[in-house]
Length: 26
Image 1: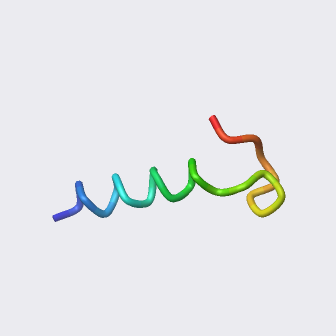
Image 2 (image 1 turned 30 degrees about the vertical axis):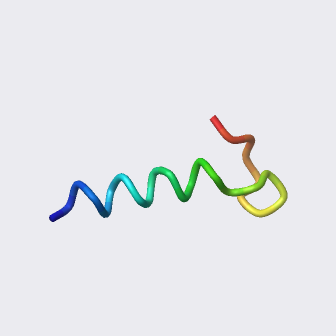
Image 3 (image 1 turned 120 degrees about the horizontal axis):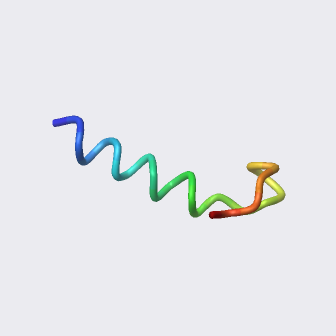
């Protein structure tokens, strides 16, 4: 089940604040 994991990671990365990720959310 790679799809749920990929979706979770995608949502997690897009939800990261700019101060933490260093990049603006897209």
